[in-house]
Length: 241
Image (cartoon, rainbow, N blue to C red; front, side, top):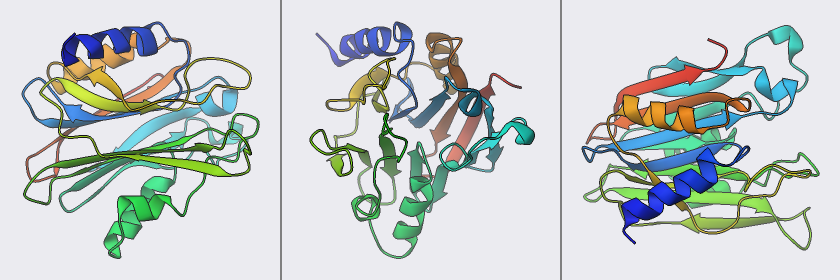
C-alpha cells in the first residue's frame, strides 16, 4: 500500500467518517511539492463554537464571534499560526507563543514544550498538539509534538516528539486532539497520521472543510509556505463568516 493510499484511507476513517477528531494540525507538501500547514478547530459547546479565525499577515488568531457570549477565553483564544525567519509554527493553543519566544531567545521546539502541560480541562485533559516547519537550514525539517495526560496519573503530562523525514508531494503528517467523540473525549493515540495534501491550497482547503463534520467544524486555515520559509498564501474559512 503506497503512502498516498494510506493517506487517503486515514483521511476517510479519521476525518471524513469521524464526527469529532477535535482540533488538528498538519505539516506537509501540496501537489506541487510546496510546503503547507493546515489547522482546524471544532467545537461541541457554545463557548467553543463562538469563534472564528482572523488573519494578520502570516499570523492566524482565534477570536470570539460574539464577545458578550464568551464564558472562558483561556483555552479558546490564542495565536494558532506564528512565524519566525525561515520557520513556521502551528499549534492548538497558546503554546504557539511559547515556541515562538523560545526560538527567539535561542531555545528549541522541544525545550519550549517541556515547559508546558496538557490542557487543564478535566475530565477531557485535551492534548496540546504542535508542529513546526524549519526551512532556515540546508535541509527542510518538520517536527511535531503531542502533550497529553499520563494514563496512570492525569495530573502529570506525557510528552511525545516526532521528527519525520520530509514527506513526498501530496502528503502531510498530522495530529488531532481526539480519536473521536465521547464523554470524556478520547485523546489521540499513536504516531502522526499520514494525511493527503493533494492539489492547490484552495483544493486542500475545500477537501478538509468538506470532510469535517458540518455540525462541529468551526474554522480552517491552510498556509502555503515559500522556499525561504515565508508565507506565500494564507487561506481561512469560518462557519460564522
